[in-house]
Image (cartoon, rainbow, N blue to C red; front, top):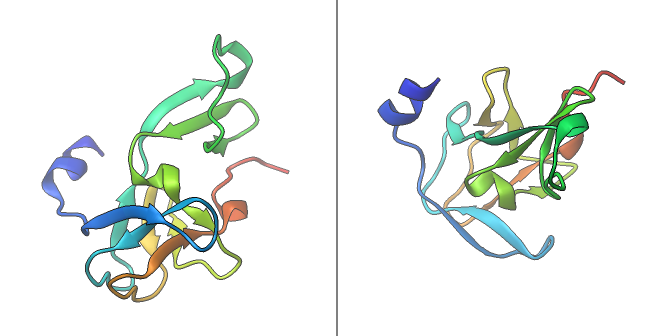
Length: 116
């Protein structure tokens, strides 16, 4: 995974005000369907052992782990009609072509690996 992060050119993105909520992530160039838009990485907390408050905008894995993203993923807003999904390798993938200037969004319910 780490080699992938260094060997791959990711799309140029910007963070700015969003109509959804606060700030959002926007494509600065077109992103093709199936392309990796954002790798998901950061600090992984074990919730039951954390000595600090877990992040407000984390990604939950099971009932005891939460990832605090260390990149643009922190600013992704929720949409019921998202243009990104998270694959099994923790990569945010374009579900369809994304236009330059379009906000990148994620259905938060699909970014949770908790076994309900």
